[in-house]
Length: 424
Image 1 (cartoon, rainbow, N blue to C red):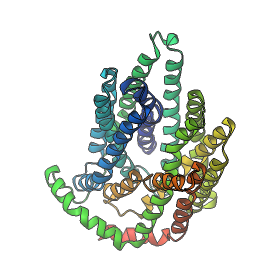
Image 2: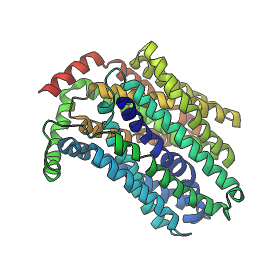
Image 3: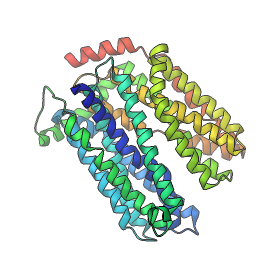
């Protein structure tokens, strides 16, 4: 019973913070930024401003993720740092309520800080996975987290969409106030559902725990050593490279899907419907994909998901009607939770004991640098050919290369090396 409480308490953090990624990052902030915070008559400028905001938050976390991970391991501070960054995200999300019309710089500041809290918190959330689940359960528990995240994020987003479309139902004066209240609702949701991980998930013990100030200096010194360890452990290095390539393809598709739909003339309602489809299909699909993986093997299941994303890319090339956009959203919902949760649990198998946050720092760094190659490749090929569909099709290369590298990873040998490394 205690283990179940610990597992569900950990998984509910995904339920908690997915409200931010769904309602704020993917849903309302880009729309509200253009129409309210920035100049609605200059779409190019507002797109540039929002792009800079997303880039700054991603780069900050990508650069500091390995350092934060090393500090967390040395100081037994995984849970402490998760709580710190979670509530940074909560406070900064709530602060968006106070931003007035036209105050785009203040909106960008709060959004960047909230996004840093969201992404940094995930480093330590992921690193707690080996402490709440043994090897036999890690795939299920990882999938459970993603599944609850899709459900929780989807449920709150559905309420927020209703608030936006029908503010009178909730006694809200207008749609702009409804969106600002949606940001407050995300902060409250995120804060409340972080409480289970605070109360019921223990801080993993480390054999060489040191005070925090020494953990900072030791963590910085250890960063270079960790990089060298990854280079020496060629299996984990190969996996990380494979993950970076196919995750780059996944992230590019996810981030471009709504933009492509908008450029093809789909209405805002269609785009919102597609986001909700991904969330509610992703909820059962993440758990069902874990069951599927038990029958075909975890590695094979990830390879199949990579193939599924290749098919999604091909279908995106031929997309012309609204129904096509919905089909793509449904397929993304089927594969997204599976490929992300199983990739996380596969990586867990390769991580030495007491090095979880440190190695997950690198894992998350690559995740944050995902969607770097894809957009550049799509843009360049679109420019050369004059056809955006050809640019979309180019993403297939990332899935092919990522799949080939993943096939080369021997996870049994990787687990053996990780065990020996952790005992030294």
